[in-house]
Length: 451
Image 1 (cartoon, rainbow, N blue to C red):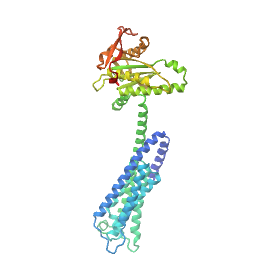
Image 2 (cartoon, rainbow, N blue to C red; image 1 turned 30 degrees about the horizontal axis):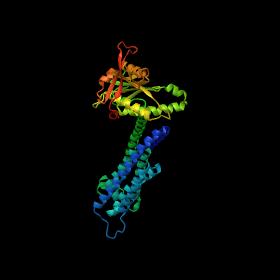
Image 3 (tube, rainbow, N blue to C red; image 1 turned 60 degrees about the vertical axis):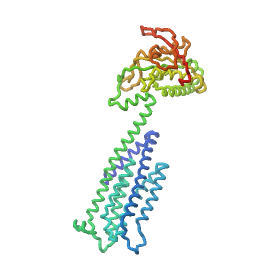
Image 4 (cartoon, rainbow, N blue to C red; image 1 turned 135 degrees about the horizontal axis):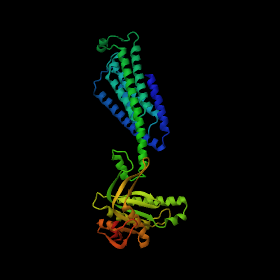
């Protein structure tokens, strides 16, 4: 058994070394799990000591009138005080390993002192306490350490429990050298205060085996915990690169993501491009260009999310966004128009790294294909279709018509916001399409209603 414990300690040491090589933020996430677990351990310890106190209060007292010292209340009071200190420490931070080891020793000291006191309380020879069922609480204290996902604490708790019971046996054997109370008869053992060493060592063996089983299970669980934290961290990082809806679809999908997974649906597409950003970039340093774009993208993204839009791509200083069928009363076209007006209002009042920006917006509605595109090793989520190409072309036509927002006829027909009026801007033939596209600009008859 000692070889098994050594093997487990060696494996845990290697795993702890791997843990130290993890990124700091991943280690911090694991420590937060451990911290919550240690707070739970402290609460359970408090529940245990309260249970012991209640049982002691309700149980009949058999001390003689001449007895001047009752050990149980003192043991319970000391353990209660330590548990409250443990709770206080856990509320502030994750306790150190040294404090945790001390907590384990206090747990075992409590249970064994209580068991030891039974022969005094009931005025019996020391061998009397070896038959106390209170020993079962030892397994609770060992199992408590499984909540921390640390093998070393489980092994230490098991070793402390086994060593403690051996000391309890030795005390019985040597307390009265003239009468060791040792017997080899099982019936005598069960029907008297005699000691059957084999039965007592069976308890030690059981403690060791339970400890090893728990340690092996927690060792595997700890690896799963680390893997899950790493995967959750990666998933959280990847959520910055793909739309939230895509992340939700991946989480709910029973299939592995692969190129070609796409669906066709009706939506509204918005194409946004900064006016004159190439010229502005020439006057800025690369660091200033990045800072300006990042603050601009952040502001636009907030508005799009408020109106149900999803950013599909950043293309240089341009943004491709889509509005899927909404669950509310408004249509995707209404949401897109409201978002476009909100973006334009924001640009009139806000600067980005000290720069005033303008943008042009093209909005088109129709059937598109959205899904995963790429190779077997690298995928991106994007939307494709004629509706996307037309939206990009409408954005460019703003420059020729002197407008900031242009909509297609399909978008106008899909809008049902009474506060809006649309002004026809003629028809245009888009490259690659045989049918011309009717253009419209926006007139907000009640601007405040669209805020």
